Amino acid sequence: MEYMDREELLSKSNNSVFKLVNLAAKRALEIAEGQPKLVTEKAEVKSSTVALHEISEGKVQSKKNKAKE
Image 1: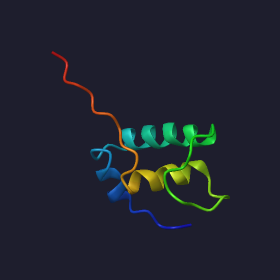
Image 2: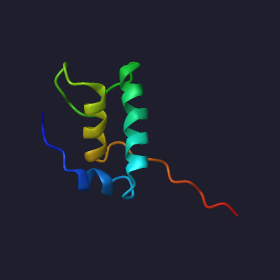
Image 3: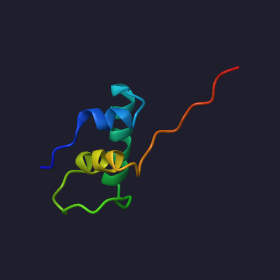
Image 4: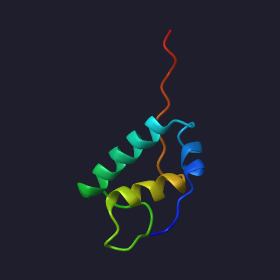
């Protein structure tokens, strides 16, 4: 298993562990349901690991909420 720097992953989610976990879980579910992978991985790699790789490479990002008025 390849090492992924926690600080790099957190910087991709505005330093929020909650947002990172939420984004990775949603993307992993999409991959498990048949959505194409955005990075090249071995076939036996779990969808959650693929999701984290996609986040670290910047291919998956969370939506920014508009400020409430």
